[in-house]
Image (tube, rainbow over all chains, first blue to last red; front, side):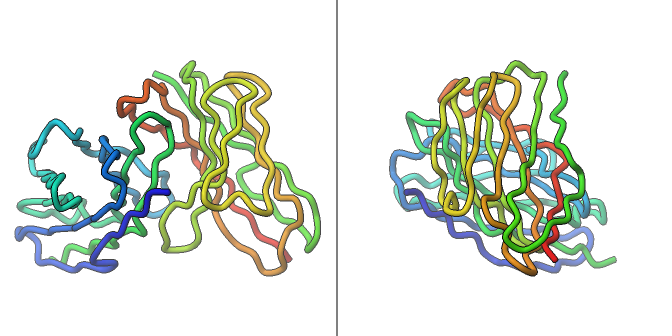
Length: 112
Length: 114
């Protein structure tokens, strides 16, 4: 089955700077890559996603990049704010079925 | 909009006990999922179901059973609770179009085994 590796597991950045999280996957058939944000005590919530027919997608301060050839995708948060502190999970979806495989998560802390 | 309800919110069991967790969604979604999340860790897929009465194993299905009794509900059974086990079990659902439908998560059931 699909395996998703997510790095780093812990990330601390200064408020106002950028934060980057990187994921890689194994199954070349995966065609959908969502990113979830989970705040303490809350359930994960989708913040941005990208499909395999795109290389870049931006929603406000969130940018996702997809390199299908390298089987890598990444999340970049520009101009980070204290409210960006949370756990972030990447995921990859197998083409043709409903199974979604998650990365192990990145704990992002924004330092004031 | 819709909502996913998980019951119970907290579940305390004894070693060896059979425990059942329930999930209901009113999104009219086709696909439902059960994930296990250990403290500070990622989500591991236990079972998922693409339609009523369907069941698909995830990566962590051993030690669990699941049942999709109807489209709106998906239950998970821990067949024999392990001592000192602590985790949050998250239910999720999606439209299930196969093209990348967003997953919506429930609030979770926090399991503690004494």
